[in-house]
Length: 367
Image (tube, rainbow, N blue to C red):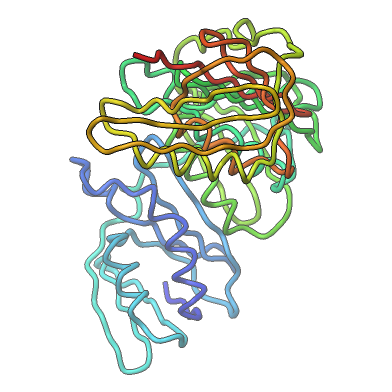
């Protein structure tokens, strides 16, 4: 196998797959990237057995078919340091590869390609599809709400629901809940509900940032696995077993007691108040009165902050405390200049309701 590729093109695709590499595995092959030539395409594949990423891209000129598994981090580091010229990568019969670019020459020992895990394949006709822009927006509006705690493993991911011509993503850490829906461009052949683990969700979002505009195909696989395919990239992941919480039962009914204000003003005020939080005292206080919101934080250890915001509000005066990060995360992914927040009271959740998006935040106790 011998291929010639521009350095930027090879580096870009290596960086797309290397996040799936597992350098700490007891299986040496998992720290490698599989480099293959199939027809007029180069195929790069990496996996940690939970998440697998594969990229296909065309060759500028014909090359002999072949494959080799090479250390992913080392190969990417070498390619990154090379000048933006044509890189020649050649695999020898002893699974060693040579990399030549300009006057630079490297030799890299590899492993047999047949040792590399075989990635699953989706059944014909199992795909549904959604535009990349829509899926990226759904991920942006939900993924920050996934739990980082290992005590409730089912929450360490995003619930993905396909019904007819709609895809819905749901994420929660038990203290906040984000629900976003978007239209499928190709309806699901069969409805499905799966929980995609956090690592796969984050890698999917990262890959979508790098991909050319188009459609993303989604398909459940055998053995509790799932696949996303778009452009020349494919992401495969094992799913999380278990019953996701009945999120729809915790969405409170709409209330007229709500305030609205400029999104940027609220985000800035919350961010500045959060400067006075500590590890043991995180709550930022919202004090609502007629057409006025005071965002404040007082901490004996570090001091205090107080900021007034003009809002549209005609309800009863109330004081509610929240984790500031829960507001900063959502305010930066909303689209409009104005935000409307329903507030039921000091012990009731606050809610943002927008077309095809719902966000719920539980208050914190004020000591």
